[in-house]
Length: 123
Image (tube, rainbow, N blue to C red; front, top):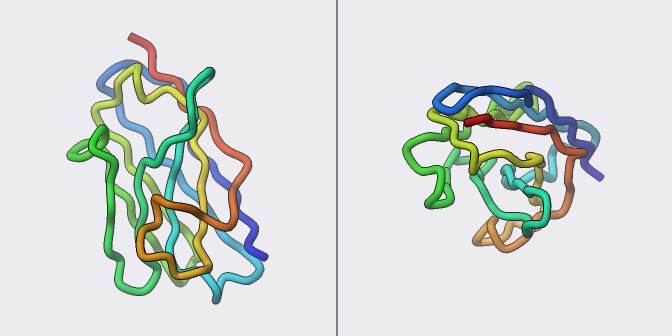
């Protein structure tokens, strides 16, 4: 089992930046990839970004390419999401997730989820 705890959410204005962090614990040796998903009220949960644990290969949703950057610190079992040029459309609860199954495409599923952190972007 992998336990995930997110932090760094908050209220900002359009164009501002925010940095989210997620710390993994327990069975961290089984982690193959980690990523971020988000869900706005009345909307479906959607993929934001992911990174492989060994090679650091990244993948981004089209809506955040060029604005968000995902990174990881394996020694600290931490994954970060640097969010720049934030838009009201980015407002959502952001969830950290971990893949332990070695999926070819992390957007297709994750095995463990954090509790979420709220990001609100005002216009």
